[in-house]
Length: 187
Image 1 (cartoon, one colour):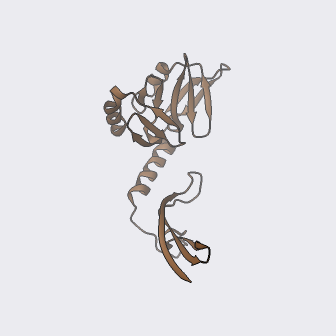
Image 2: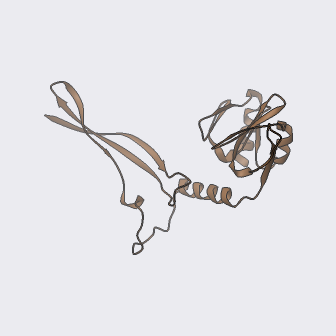
Image 3: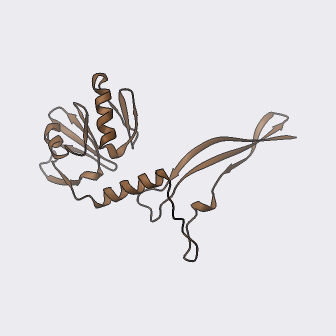
């Protein structure tokens, strides 16, 4: 029987923000194909796990360099955890809520009211998008008349749309795309 080794996939692994350790590394998938009487079949799959990604014990040396992705992730987490700015919203029941501004992913208009979206919650608020835009003016970007976005949670920008960390795609007007893209990159 004939065997063939083929590296077919790469992906980025990062730990969940709630974990007690940090990991960000590119992994590689290796498939070993075997030519059997029924054609090619996978006989072995290996996913790499380089030693540098394992937890470090007390008597081991700790690496003193950090990759770009790890550095970006660490800076975002420090900013998120140390920011004391709050967003005050009045929910549909009339309760006043104070949300950590760094936990808000985006705000969308819903008629004269809004929906405040965090990674874990969706809050229906009586506040107008204009009112909330005033509270977030220096760190959020109005990507559309109906969307106010925290650039920290944007994972992709492409022609006429942005993708948020939770996979939500939000529209960007054609006429304002270049201007909004520059704003997002400058924040």
